[in-house]
Length: 75
Image (cartoon, rainbow, N blue to C red):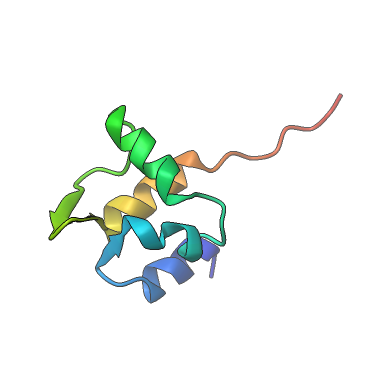
């Protein structure tokens, strides 16, 4: 099972922006998502619950997967 499958199985159906840092082990911070949302580059489908920004789990994981890059080998 890869890490994204594990996240899919453990994350709730909606993911609070404020919890993204903890959920990704600090790789992506809530402020990064906020900045990317303002540029139209964040996860799709965000919405508010009260004053909290949340993302649908599937949209967040699709966005996260698109950001994964293989390391470049030095020549």
